[in-house]
Image (tube, rainbow, N blue to C red):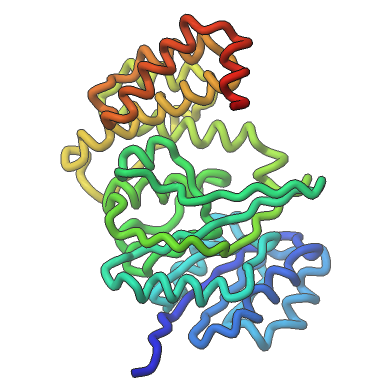
Length: 332
């Protein structure tokens, strides 16, 4: 019986990335994957991108270069056109590892009930430093959503999941992938996610990248998402704390494809894990007062047993342990 290769759609949004897009294109087209659909949506670049797209146009399923409404709009064009069983997007300054798509297909074949595949991601920096991001999925969907970690370029979802969750929010320009991921987790949880240990993609940090140059704008959109969720769930104390961080757009509304009543408990857990994760972050940065406020606000009954214990340990360390000893323990 011949080996099954699900059709994979890769979407690349692009704008003025002529310095990097050739490497991105070649990393996809050289996969030698037997059922690949590769779509590129360029927003009317003014650099040499158009020349590169014309050069490699014959290896692409479809490409266009025309003014659009931003990255989310470009990706949505691809999602609406995609015919793949699995769909992802790869930004025009990132690139796949050899055999990445074969690794995704192998993981997909191992579990016919999954609707998403997640692999490992490498982040690399101009100074030569490299960091690896592993599985961003925790024990439950609400905990995973609360921590809000994602390695989007190494995440592949079924077309059916995109059809149920919907397109990206085009009013978001930095955290549209996070918003979609939270919706996915609240609808599906983590039971249909298959993880592959293979390194799939290389994520490039450079001075012109949004991730590097506009970090504050990411924070505004991220906190606005969690603020809207908390507000709609009637969690006024938690929403006020999120707003107190100074990073919200109160006009933003988080929309779900299911009734809030169906997932009330999951949403509460999500918000408490978001606050707990921020407390851990403050603790790691030695911002002890902010950490104390977070740990106090968290309802321990909304945490898993191991995390309740972790919270108590962090409270004890944060309250009673001298700073030099905390820093010493971190180095052990």
